[in-house]
Length: 151
Image (cartoon, rainbow, N blue to C red; front, top):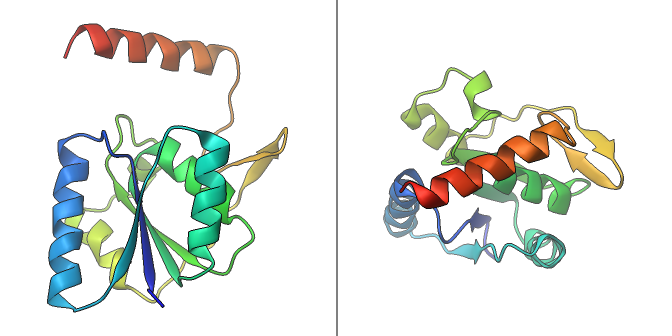
């Protein structure tokens, strides 16, 4: 049985690629086998798959931002596995609350220390940072359109 599940967004940017390469080196260095799951963008499908895979591990490593973390939180909300985050999102609103260096974030992967976090729930979905509708969704949509036009 693998001890770790790594969840990442396949189309992620430079920071995510750095984390992925680092994890692959750690996998070889420590001679451990990890499960790898690249998200598909289909929330329900990804949640179900992550939940099935998370049943076989003690820790889930999330490489991404608030969206990927949101997905994994919803997939693992009542499970005993731990989560570790390697921030690699556009805004990283959740991660910015913690004054951690890249090395400190990476140290969380192998740490036995845990921190409980409160979750909110709206309409059947859990959220870990903030919950927003309307204006928040419009801002995210506008930013994604802007980013597609200006690489």
